[in-house]
Image (cartoon, rainbow, N blue to C red; front, top):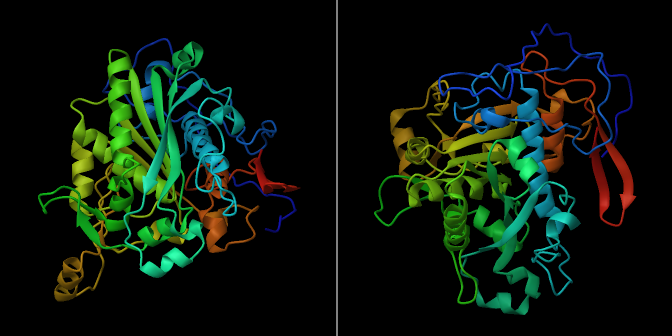
Length: 425
């Protein structure tokens, strides 16, 4: 990727800077947080960290940042504290990518490169206050032809490490967050069979009743398939969440499921499964980076009914967020606006619906654009979909009237043994 060097002309914006009060005072369920955006066009760069955000004390306001009110008033302009939380959760997904063994020549291909006790520290999250409690694996349910046996073993890798569960155990971090947080982090597509599952784009029913909510066949297969030696991702998640609820169910608790690409789709399925399986679960929030569509309108309605909160972070230039299928009725969870496909004959619409290709976007959307960043000169499909691009755009986004702040930069840190690393300032 080429780095654009030059002077960034900051956009002009008039903004009222309002702080919502002391964190020591409780906030009632009927209150709404006022967006806190301290960005100034003349402000200084904030440090040299990958995501230069100073941790803030969320205290009693934490549920608002987890989406209790569908992030009302926090997205446009983007609240600084919410930005910090989004970037923080994005680092959990980056840790999953950094820990995955991509080397197809390695005997450990498609596994986690580190032990459970050292994984967070080895992947850069050692000081976060979280402890990894469970590794997660996904299994492909695709039936392979016989000739695959003659191909390299990595081609037919059926089960692979896809993420982990981490629980916040640090007292200071729990006090800052206002509750004990449980993170489920899921990476995107990495193996051949996962790519094949992605292509199984027709909708299928979630439950055995053959009615109601429907989801993409490949995503459901990855979530529910198992082998004789490897339990399904669904089984592992249910077992671990059951343990977590038994251990910490009597204290303030949140379940935050964060994923990128395929991981975002599986995160949405996981939220549906948890809120459907467990009685009175804690607040379940999904932070979705560059996720494809997952299910139909009935699936979306059931997610809303179950109380799952989904923040869908979308790059307008990312093709993956526009597939699979078609969207005829795209009601936004928060404002109820409908988007209809104009001029489509009723008979054609019915024909497409019968093919099980009609999807519905879920949750509340935070829409960004690579074209608004002066540092992204390469607008190819891979760059627009990259998780690092998403974190860069979140770091730089101000509002719909001022899409990018000049102090947010993306730079290349040369070549390393792991390839070119992207840093954020």
